Amino acid sequence: MQRHTLYAYVDGSDLEDVAAPIEERLLVLAAAPGWVTSRPTVVNQKANVSGGRPGDLPDWDLGINLALPDPGAEPDGWFGDVERIAGHLAKLHSAFDREFVIGIADNVSGVAEDLFFVESDAPDLDRLRSAIGVRGG
Image (cartoon, rainbow, N blue to C red):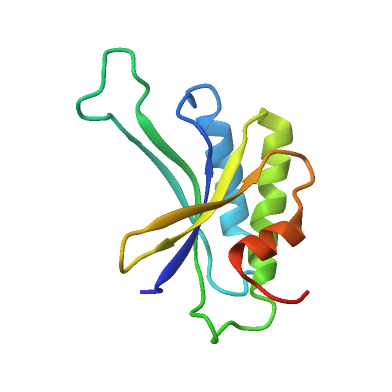
């Protein structure tokens, strides 16, 4: 198992009206050829919050996970996979008027950190690169 996973999820829990078409488009992206690191996994999980109040929306994870290479062992062009996901999320933002959060989860410690938000049709890929801690172009 890879130590780190990049996650890219819809920001929010009110997804009833967009979950199916977003999931469809993410499945098409994940199935497409040309991934450098590994084929991403589409996630669509809804869980009710224990102790929540009536009317609270469930926690809903809808997005895509990508196993990241270990630092120092990255294959050439691996960050293109991340840029490809961000570009696809920008298209989904345009189509569904939803924001997306990109972050990295440490699969050993269980710690996850949100690093970047896709809030426009043209995300700042240099800022994304910096947020993930990738040097150079």
